[in-house]
View: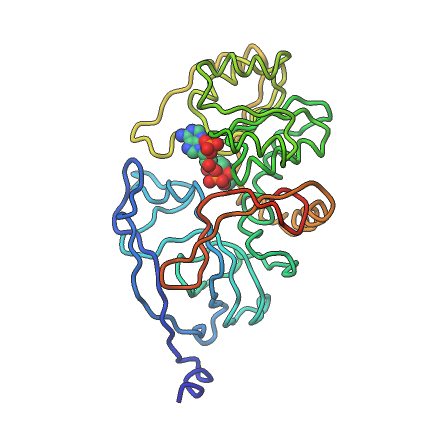
Length: 348
Ligand SMILES: NC(=O)c1ccc[n+]([C@@H]2O[C@H](COP(=O)([O-])OP(=O)(O)OC[C@H]3O[C@@H](n4cnc5c(N)ncnc54)[C@H](OP(=O)(O)O)[C@@H]3O)[C@@H](O)[C@H]2O)c1
């Protein structure tokens, strides 16, 4: 009976899902989300180009916070809808397909549901994983969206030159740790800021940053930057915004570049802060430019090959801390932490 249902594509399997209970203001609380029982069909609608994914790894990324709020004006990604499953970047296996580019058994990464199985009606935004021999979780980090963000933001937006002085905030995060390493590969001097002594130590001992400091221990961020960059900053890779950005603006060099990747210090505020010291953009002729990683998805496979070869030949690495989605075997990334016995060598 079960075999006949499977063959006919009518088989239903349990599907635990994480739903958003309500739109969020301020800091999200665990109670804003709920794990509920559901069911999934392991078949695509007849004649469609859809795929059904079995989700293996789900990543909790900062931009998801924005989607949890209700916006009066449409944002660059739609708000989550209360009562519906959360969506985010993940690594999945194709278990049913009507799409010529995706076969059953392929591994993919891209936006999927926070659940065990997801029907993707239009799989065009999924990227096929061409190196399934790599630990698949890397495709939520260095080989996935955060890695592509670092690569695009550093090379395409900041346009680094050998010898540039580079500063990275949230440097131990998924994006920042890759930016720092790309800066070193390019022959730059790179300093990172992070929020704990453990992370600062990692930046200097594992990821090859020239210097790093704990911004939470600094009374005066301007003085800290003057200490690490007596000649000023050529490239600031912006991940946090707020008072760090204000201090950086005072320390930029003439013709410096600020790549605006994110402003995480603002995401939980009900009223965003203003930014002082913008006059420096004029007096130092600084270019400050934002970008979205989604604009670079077309370059993903070139990036994947380049990172794969770097990963096989350089440095050390960082693993994520994974824990299971309650009641399922889908793994959820909680936060980054060091791992000393990892098989490849880019710090991922
Ligand atoms: N433009 C794009 O397309 C794009 C793509 C990906 C990511 N992003 C942005 O890039 C940034 C980094 O993303 P990620 O994936 O690397 O994040 P992540 O791995 O989740 O790390 C984020 C880190 O930010 C720091 N942080 C948190 N709250 C902060 C605050 N109030 N002030 C200062 N630092 C704070 C924390 O590190 P500490 O303990 O060191 O403070 C945290 O671990 C985010 O702003 C994200 O939105 C943008």
